Every structure is written in C-alpha cells, then in structure tokens.
Amino acid sequence: MMRAWMLPMLLVLCGSAVAAGTALRGSPWGAAAVLLVFVALAGVHSPLVFPRSIGALEAQRRSAADGRPVVFWRSGCTYCLRLRVRLGRHARRAHWVDIWRDPEGAAVVRAANEGNETVPTVVVAGRSRTNPDVAWVREQLSAASG
Image 1: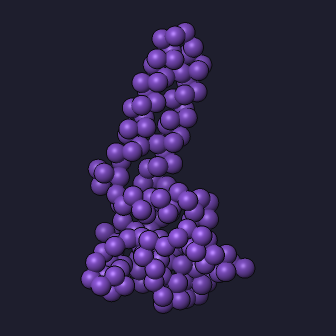
Image 2 (image 1 turned 120 degrees about the horizontal axis):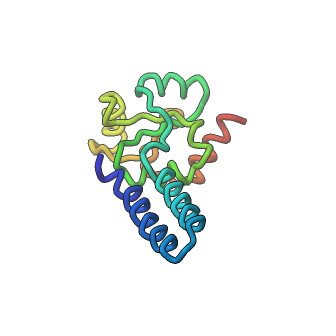
C-alpha cells in the first residue's frame, strides 16, 4: 500500500522544494502556483483517483446487463494506475474490482492468468485480457455505451 503513495509523496516534496526556491526569490504567488500544480499532479497519481470498487459478483452482474468491461485491479499496481490515468474520465464507466478486498475477484483473476494475480485484468463478455491496450479498453467502453 505504501508503494502506491510513493509517486504522489515525491511530487509533493519536489513541488515544495521548487515552491520554496521560488518564494525565496521573491515570488510568493509564483510559489503558490507551482505548489498547486505539483499537488494537483500528486492527486491525479494517487490511489484516490480509482472509481469506487464493487464486488466481483456484482460487477459481473452489471457487466452482463450493460456490456461494460470489468477491470480487476489492486492498490500499488503501477500498471493499474497507468490504465486508470490513461482512460481519464472514461474510467468511471467501467466496473472496478479491487482483488485485495474481494476474494471472488482474486479468484477470477487467477483463473484468467494461470493461477497468477496479474492485474489489471479486464473482462468483457466472459473474455479476459491482462494489461490490455488502453485503446482496446476505450473501444469496449464505447461499444457498451453506443
């Protein structure tokens, strides 16, 4: 879990250092702007940006009804974070399952990945892809909504 917060903490620390230097040079408004940018970047890269997780059974039920993909993920996974960030605002349309909080979700991921809990694993219509291309996930989201 701590690993998931390393990049956001590093961004805040670096931003603080740059802002302090800017403030010492006599530009308090510039320092505030720099710090605000770094804090915003830290927020975007934090685990807080993931949509609320639901259970695997509920996600599969919803996916069967609306055709949207189910994304299995876990905290601290840089590949999951990268998928989430690259999906942008479209990520909220998928059903997200945290495999560390949901044993059924972990079982689905192990079944799809030869016993490994490799994430992100995306399941659409019973077919799974591990660490899929973002364009493919966007296509699946578009197909489900259109």
